[in-house]
Image 1 (cartoon, helix red, strand yellow):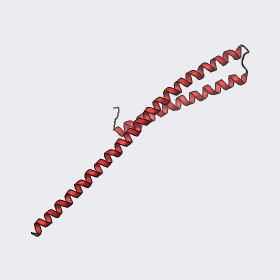
Image 2 (cartoon, one colour; image 1 turned 90 degrees about the vertical axis):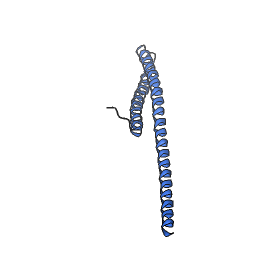
Image 3 (tube, one colour; image 1 turned 90 degrees about the horizontal axis):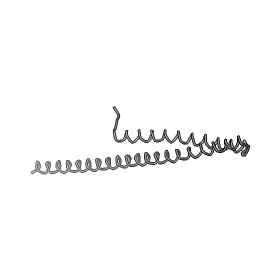
Image 4 (tube, one colour; image 1 turned 135 degrees about the vertical axis):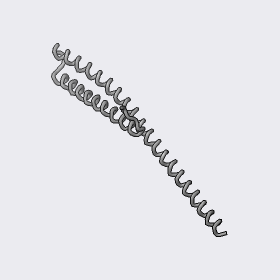
Length: 118
């Protein structure tokens, strides 16, 4: 009689331990899914930012070229030319930063997904 009670208690302990392990596994899987989804969202946003900065760079380049032409024709001041150049430099900086961000976010996502390029 005591041995059957002991077995039942051991069985209940084992079931509780199994339930706890399953709960821990589910929680871990959920955390991983959330991390992966966050990394994927970060990567998508970095790509969108890259394309926006690329368009801004193209626009800033055209504006700087127009102001340079106007300056050489005497229709724009050095201030206007300098402003256009500063905007171009800023756009170039933002573009390069967005490239770096895309690379970093991609690496973060690949690390989470355990993807390696060998």
